[in-house]
Image 1 (tube, rainbow, N blue to C red):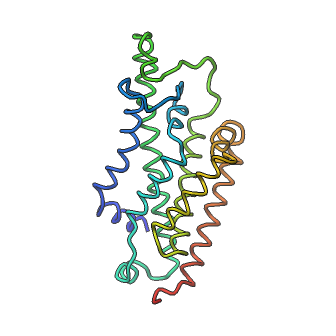
Image 2 (cartoon, rainbow, N blue to C red):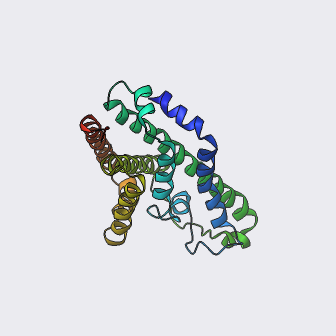
Length: 235
């Protein structure tokens, strides 16, 4: 399945590069003094990443990324898969690989921007740090970078699996994307579960949050396998 994912990425390498580069580009634009897009001050890597609302920015970006990579037709089904369940294996591999690429790109870009402003601009040009929406932290951030990265990766993977499950049920990629994005936007307004996972889970309950997300991803994978096993591809 990794080979199939590699082929998907290779066939659409330019699109993958453009979409992955969009997040770092947006981060640079937000912190530049020429823009007033960001009204939120940031003091560390976590704040910088969360300047972008996860539900409004990263979820649509990731769904567009994996949705554009995966194309399914009769030729692909006969050429690539020996069993129907192999389709679900392919989608899981695609989601995990692309989630890893997106998470790594986001954290690498945020880390570089944070290091440059915190350790080059602020110490030597303290009068100008506010131009980059940077506010020095008064207390040390308790959240581990590794924990935050793992949760970001797993939440993104969960959303990708949910999208492909809805796509298998609806047979329509646009409708599946809408059904995936909309509940998370409403949920963020009402309950803010994802925000709490990032805030509380990464800082206080990293093992519990990680275990929960792994179980949810596994359940979606099992349901997706059963869906393709029983799916009628001829009607």
